[in-house]
Image 1: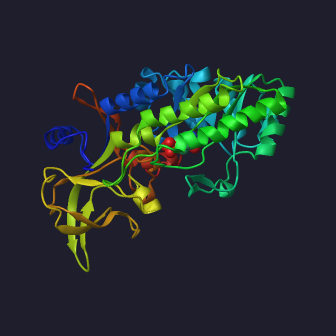
Image 2: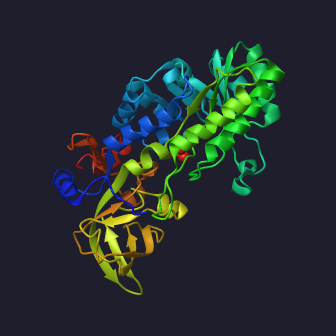
Image 3: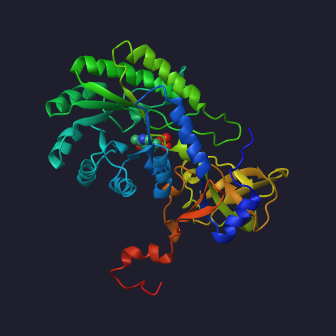
Length: 420
Ligand SMILES: *Cc1c(COP(=O)(O)O)cnc(C)c1O
C-alpha cells in the first residue's frame, strides 16, 4: 500500500515559513475521524469509552480535541494527572493505570477521583495507607505464560512486570470488597502494536471469561472491562491497517457469547489506545542539512533521535517522504541520520529513496504517538516544537521549541547560565 501524508508540499512549505524545522505536525481532521470511527465500532456497547493514553502524545491541545470527541484520558504519572486536570478532565474521565506507583501519584489520582487501576496486590494496602480505597476500582491482570492468536505467539506476559496473577486477582477483589469497594474493573495489556483484527477480540475473550469467574467467586460487581492499548498501525507500506469496525464486531461476538449468558450484559467496554489514535496523525518534519559520502551514503537531517527515539531504540521503521519527490524513482540508497554522537542515531539504514538535495523537506511518517513524547536532551539537543494542522487548513503552534534557557533551567539557582 502506498503511504500518503496528510499534508502536501505546498501546504508544508507554507507552514515551514512560519515554524522552522524540525517539528512534529499533527492532523486535527485525522484525529477526529479516528476517534469517531472507534466510537462507532463500539457503539453497540452503551458504556463504551476510549481513555486516550496520555503518555503517547502528552499535549493539552491534542487532549482537548479528544475530549471534544468524548474521550477520557489514561494517565500513568503525577504530571500526566496534572495535565488531565488542567484540561478539565475529572472523576470517571480519568483512568489511572500506573505501576511502581509513588504515594503522591495515588494521592493526586484520589484527589481527582480518577478510576484507579492497581498493578499489584500490595498496592491495595499501600493505597489505603497513603490515601483511601475508592468505591470504584480496577486491577490489572497478567495471565502469565505466552499470549497467542491462532497459534502464533504475540507476546510473553509471563516475562512482563505488569499486573496480578489470576489467584491474586481473586484475593485482591475479596480484600477490596472488605475495604468498602463496590464496583470493579478488569484491565489487561498483553501485546503491543498488534496489526491483526484479532487482538482485541482474543483479549476480550480472556477478560470476559475471567470477569465471569471473578464475579462468581467473589460476588464482586464487574462494571467495566478495559482492553487497554495495543492496537497497532501499519508503519511499513506493505502492512494492512487494522479494520476497527471488524475489531468492534469481534469484541461484540465475544461479549454476546460470554457476558450476556452470564447475566453480565451491563459491563462497559473501555479502551486506552494511544498509538492507534495518534501515530498516523503525526509526522516529523525535518530539513536535509548535510550529505556525506564515505563507505556509505549519508543524509544528515536537522532532527535526531532526541526528537524521535523509536528507530534508535527498537530499530523501528518509519516511512520517509521527500517532499516534492513523491513520484521520483527510489534509486538512491541512504542512511538517514541525526547529529547525536551515537551511531544508532539513524532514522533509516540502507533506505532506497529519491535523490535528496540539501534543503529538501524530509518527512518521517507515523510519529504522532510515542514520538515527541519519548524525546530527551542527550547531547544537549533541544526538544522541537509541535504544530497542529487545524481542520480549516491553518497551522497552529501547540508547543514551542525548547530554548537553551529551558535546557539550563534546572541550574537556575546557580546564576551560571543567566546570560543565555
Ligand atoms: C502505553 C499504554 C497504553 C497505550 O498503548 P498503545 O500501544 O499506545 O495503544 C495504554 N494503557 C497502558 C496502561 C499503557 O501503559
